[in-house]
Image 1 (tube, rainbow, N blue to C red):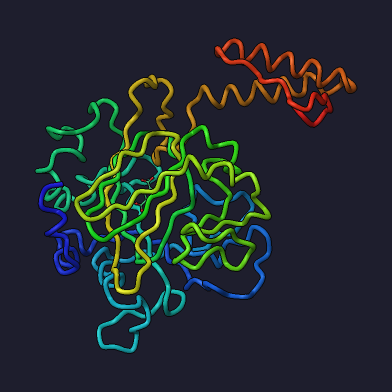
Image 2: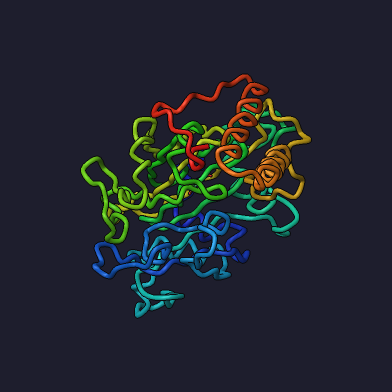
Length: 359
Ligand SMILES: O=C(O)CCC(=O)C(=O)O
């Protein structure tokens, strides 16, 4: 990681050549940890989690506002004690939403809808300090990936106490922590059936306990985290496969494609901001034709998976006119043929029921 972990002080970052460049920052209202107000279902606006654009549940509103500000201003906001609270002090910034608000930057390219983020292009001076380590940037002597598979390098700047919704990415990822500490919780792809996945995100309100839980819904406490056990009972089955990793400055974690991850910046008072860089690249055995050229965030499912989903929908409608038990009987047969083609077998239901809802 080169000299970055020692060099990237707030003063260094606020005075870097890119300090005047405008960046799009997610600004989240103060969290209402421990609030007794009942939140309507699907309302995540009170959670301590930043629901970055692509990871929100369909039909829910954002729990942040986008605000353009110079990079140097972001650094000064997240580095001051209690961001936004010091607005009365000379030189401090007025809150965007309210005192106690949180900030999160996921850097993007200058033409964000056209190309993926590339740290050496958007933050050349910061990239130069990382380059010596040679593991994170493309072409580095110790890079984990072939340059032809490279997708993007992203700067992540987070206020203390912010967390990202549990999600997967379709690309392999080296998450390099430069400043501050964070906890990454990982689940393997096989845990997907227990994670209530919609799009690329789990809908489970998973929260580390010292971060204020899940806004007052029925949680399962005592193991360092809470989740809503009433809405998400099957999540319990995912717990054994969970891996929890603490990352500190100068440490990096390989997050394989399709592994779900929940990322939480240190929430302890005074722990300060978390700053990380991650490199995404196409996994080695995924052919280039399975990458969507318009996938600037590295999280679009491959074309093959979209075709498979369309064919599955057509298979479903092909059986729609059959009555039960014919529909279930032939659906099961189709599933068995599909599984056999992939070298898998469909397990028989242990209770032996053949009702229409079981397939
Ligand atoms: O470190 C972070 O802030 C988020 C990392 C993340 O979600 C990712 O690398 O996909």
